[in-house]
Length: 169
Length: 175
Image (tube, rainbow over all chains, first blue to last red; front, side):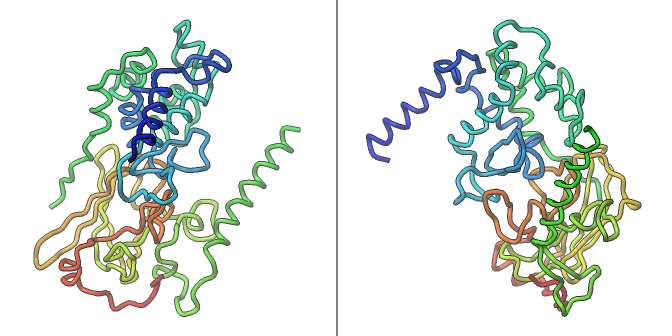
């Protein structure tokens, strides 16, 4: 990568990480983008698989190295999640209900005002069923991110969740 | 009004579903409809409660290599659900495997592992992520890897290892 491309990349990264989405357009607050990758990695195994929100037709579309790829040259069979994919998932998540998210970030209150939480907790019809329960690691990961201080350990615990052990001969 | 909207939505869904099935193309004349047909395709499009074919809970195709050139027969396909309930089925000579709803009632998500014998040693291949919606392997595992496909389900990409895996003599269902 040459110097100008690197500078542009850095400028884009800073713009994403420091400026709340849409802040200059309509003043809506969004959670921190810089700390989002660890949250995205936590969401990937539960929500972002190819059969769920790793599908192009979903309203909430999540991208990832083992899920839906942003670059048509990449495949779901290999590679790590790219910065562009984290940014795309961030936009997808924060643009789902921007006003409700803004209200929650400004005034606090009941997190289940967000469809994201209602559906993932199974409070609202969700084809993917219950993906998190209040207080479990994925729930803590998401809520801590919304509160402005990601609980890294919870996020990592979900992202690195081991598959069930087979007890077959 | 509400009924009209519901009927319209149902019609749209049905049309989309019909288009997906049509996109699979016709049956291969040399392969009769049955357990050996349509290898590598998303089985549950037709084999569902709303489809024309007998409903299946999970189904897919196992190949020997990542290019999906040859089917892998006799591979144990192990399903394990959220309650740690396991079910084992085996791929047939076309590489196809399937589980009927009467045989297994898992609680999603569903994890999958493959097991096969290689020179007397047991080899296990684990799927990296679980299935959350249903057991239709071909939806995500299309014949080639792409931005929304993990590529075919295969045993190994190691030529030395592949040379030791017996070839299936079954021609039914080859892509």
